Structure formats: structure tokens, C-alpha cells
Image (cartoon, rainbow, N blue to C red; front, side, top):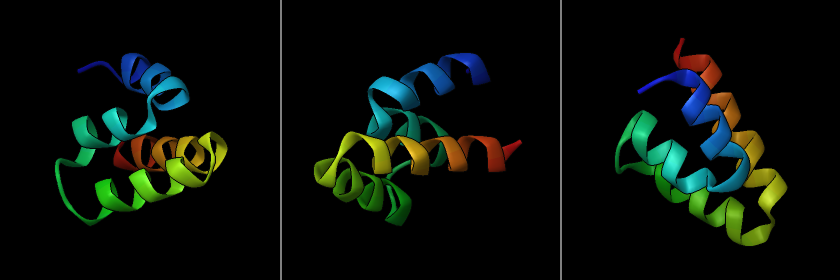
Length: 54
């Protein structure tokens, strides 16, 4: 999947972007927790994972 699509998903639906990038695992569960605490921490974590994956 294109990085642009994953970046847009990271801004609006961070757990879905992490799921597409890393699959179900620790990072996915951590991102769900961060998103529940606020959309900004979840989005930052998702963006970090997507850009680190390059």
C-alpha cells in the first residue's frame, strides 16, 4: 500500500495505519492505547512507525 495512503490513515485512523504497517502485535496494541488517550499521541506514533519503515 502506498505511503501516502498510510500517512493519511495515520492522521485520521491511527490504529488502522499501524495495522497495515506492522500487523497485529505490540505496536498495534500500543497505538490503540495511545489513541484512546488522545488522537494526537496515536497519530504521532503511527506516523513514526510509517516513516521508520521506509
